Image 1 (cartoon, rainbow, N blue to C red):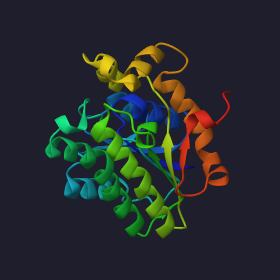
Image 2: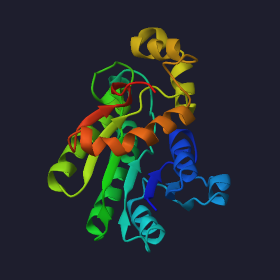
Image 3: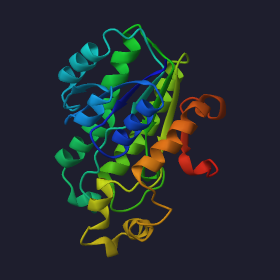
Length: 239
């Protein structure tokens, strides 16, 4: 039976991924700050943790995965949007917090996994097109995803036994979109206006639909995408 570890399982895409993998019969391990009690009741092996706390993160995953000799799939999904606006208007502390969650927490997890002696077959870090194309308004989020993409490339180069992908799920209709689409100054940011226009259409599917597609695509990545590369769910034909 395949094993999968997902971060950020209490809500949004991470919750939908955990649900999808549980339904498919996987052994699913997950972490987030809040406990998804219904998923735990359905078999999710869960531990609560603040991923910005490096020591707590290491201790938590050490306990959670203690009896697991190998991991088929690690999905680094947890992330935050951070403040929207011009980068000059955001303090270093604000940007640093976004990177703590979206970048350095993932490094903490990867370092523990890869140094633990466990076999890790595949790692997918959830990225975004915001880390590829500079779009005004996304400031810290864009920086964090661009850095994540490069970090994935470096881990891939240094760990050829594991397949790595920085994977964009495309626009997903989650609570993060509430913050984006309700921004009072969206007229200043074309990228935000584009997301507002796509919400409620097939161009911004619900998290459950994206998780279902992801579960079908993820095992194709090692054969179709070079380790360390960036991939976008929209590059695959619709079912």
